[in-house]
Image (cartoon, rainbow, N blue to C red):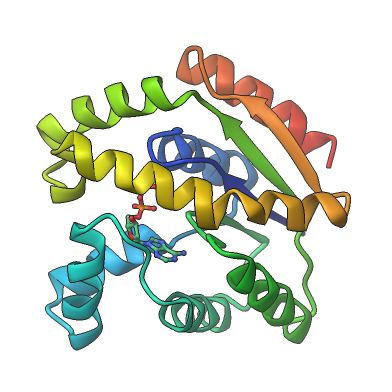
Length: 190
Ligand code: ADP
């Protein structure tokens, strides 16, 4: 079983690369951002609460995303593996993920981080905002808030996996195919 945490700041290309990795290795793709956006689209109470925070570029509470991942793991008992995208985003989420994995007799194979500079991220997200329809992509101030939330709360998650000897980083600049080739080699070596 392969269970990968794909890591990196907003706009690093996690969504794009997750789709390709999922196909190649037959994994279930779990993106907490996508799960939250489905809750918003469905107009659930959870979605309404999450939307306020997401539109402000802030993280939603740990319990909310941990609960969503817990459900999805239980819904996919027969999966060959998972790719986690946008989760865990705090050390608390990383600890909860380890417990959930253990409960389900699974383990994280590795965290792979996509490395991209802040200036490149802002350019990419503003470009994506022209077509994504995502309110959090349309304003430079909000994008910088997200990048700073990442630096303050999410970047430390890398340390959590480094301590376990499970951290690898890959250059996130280049063509989608080039990055995918590097990611595939890294996955092979996990
Ligand atoms: P990005 O493209 O910025 O990486 P995502 O689609 O992964 O964005 O997430 C969008 C927003 O959803 C985040 O800015 C945050 O508000 C919320 N979110 C997604 N995943 C999490 C998480 N694991 N913990 C807390 N908040 C989250």
